[in-house]
Length: 267
Ligand code: MG
Image (cartoon, rainbow, N blue to C red; front, side, top):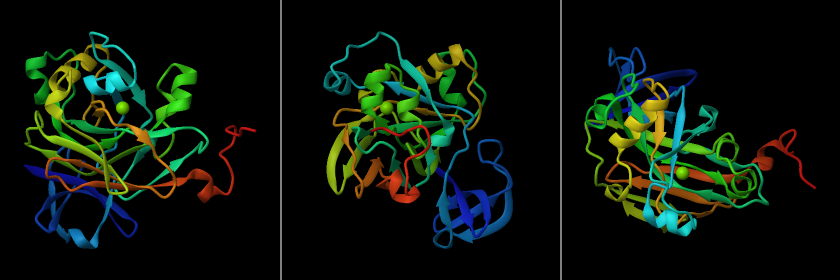
């Protein structure tokens, strides 16, 4: 397994490969080319930033039977995909800012796929050749807006509503790994990726039929049952296999701005 990430030191940002306690600085994003500069930093000295910069952030719905049941939906017979805004990405240790505290806003833990090679009309058997690696993702969702608007783009695309990280792992088999979400230390979601209805290979192949997947793009593969509301002050911890957890806290957006964002006022 190889481990990659995005790092910040003062004002400078760079991608790097993590080896033990060191980060080997790369000249380019790792999904473009793994080209070490020769510069090596201590991981402990760095701020862990976003590990990806995606042209597209694709989400998959209804990919675990127990989640389909809790949402009172039925299987569609094909993957359900839509887009989240790449501007919704949030790094490890970042704060999820709830825009509408009066709405129900849910956590959804998901395995996230990072594309490594352009993919257009790839068959299932070749699909994993187009995957660079994997990370942990959260698909934060304004459930009230999702029900009102009957589409999934806006309710899941607010800034900070897609935490990912802390790192991206290559050369790893994710076909049957445990996945878990803890809220303030309590386990809320727990399953194994082998229970996904559509595998990573199937999802990459399916998505590539309708659009060209580019290196650095991310696919969130769907959430298991146990989704639930987040509140200001919560600490979320998402875990896949033995990777370091993705940790994020929760606040109200207005806590930071002193006012609601423009055009989002409600009586
Ligand atoms: Mg989801």
